[in-house]
Image (cartoon, rainbow, N blue to C red; front, side, top):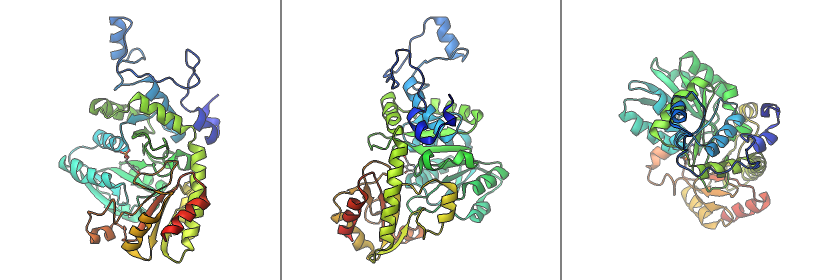
Length: 390
Ligand SMILES: *Cc1c(COP(=O)(O)O)cnc(C)c1O
């Protein structure tokens, strides 16, 4: 039976699992750094790629491979490559395909450290990046140059939740001979499959929804083609930012409930977004599936749900944001997202406190902006908690 024919709910449970010699239902944890060869000739055959097998965990490990197969199955990609973090996944792709003199176009609403990675480590290597509002397809087209090799999109974007038309941007990338890489962390393959919309590479911070339990930091790269897989795997084996077997086991365990968790997070997030939208202390709410969201139609066309992240602006600005952080009890004051527990953060006083107010404003991060990651608790109890802070 091919998993590809099954519904996502079944695939989340069964993806990546292969018959195990001793009959274990769950893939065992191969907590080993190295694997012994049956003979010198066997070792030689493995190194030459003439025989399939395991050599050393940085190059491959059965526990890690099971999880990689599972995520690749859900994304519809050739295969997956697990990394030590989401940032490691992004860096490994950049290091594979970019040379000095190349140019990158990136969404301006991306995970903060991605902006820094492009502006520091990559810029030092002679790779230039233009940041654009990728929800405006014309702005992406205008930013492309003859030397553009990669377009990096995060949708919905962080923390503004603007949505990029993936099919349109994929067409632009391919016309320019560039690859489209999509950070699918916010929605997961359960809600959005960028490869089917034309993207070439999907990356995830496994730390968020895919693992879902806030107990692992990890990343994954899923390319569409075998050629890209081989090129990226070669880089990953050398730069060595791979995941450990025990973390891979935990992520694979978390993945089995991804559909269930996502469904509850989406249901809760929409209910909270609608409640916030009607609240007098709230200036604006951004949630892709909210009927009043300016990109609601594109979101419905491109994704099967709005995800678990909601951003909103408080009328009372900075002070109101701080008061909210001090009042909530059920929401934990923490960065990150995509776990079973709900988190809240106020960028102006927390993550972006060191940024000049003008620059914050320019990046769409107003003083009253609050971002929540909605977990799987009871929606009414989460609403009561937010009410305390308003
Ligand atoms: C967290 C996050 C990352 C980085 O992932 P790490 O696992 O923390 O390295 C990248 N992109 C998005 C959208 C994220 O939320």
